[in-house]
Image 1 (tube, one colour):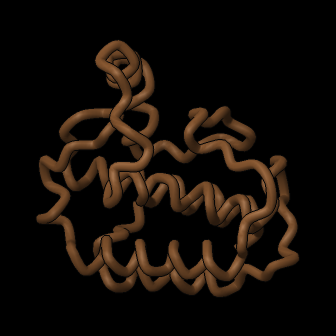
Image 2 (cartoon, helix red, strand yellow; image 1 turned 90 degrees about the vertical axis):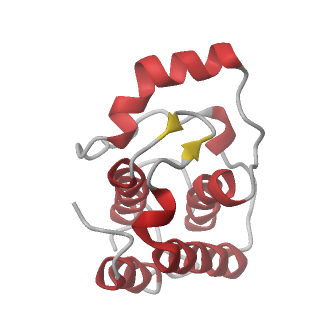
Length: 150
């Protein structure tokens, strides 16, 4: 598994982002490239901006019990998997804005490092190890960058 907290790991993702073009087409799925970038930013908004709000206790129980392990393990996501409602992006997004935001979030995550994420609480899953955070970040980015052939 790549390490988003390492300079080389984050640089690899930054290089892949910079291969995306405003007219890049997906190899599968329905999202446009601008929607995909906005979709990827949602995870970082949850980490850094507490957007959207924390799910209610019942939903958190369901997420922790049935979804968490699939999200934080090292198994890559399958093509066309369903996403949580807060990650669904509709309409047009500003490609350059979303790309810049994602680049900044990846750099911030790498600079903060593993120590910042050890035991850090996820809005959806509760406290996670830095390895679980890394797996979640890395799997999600790799899945969507592969979706667009980068």
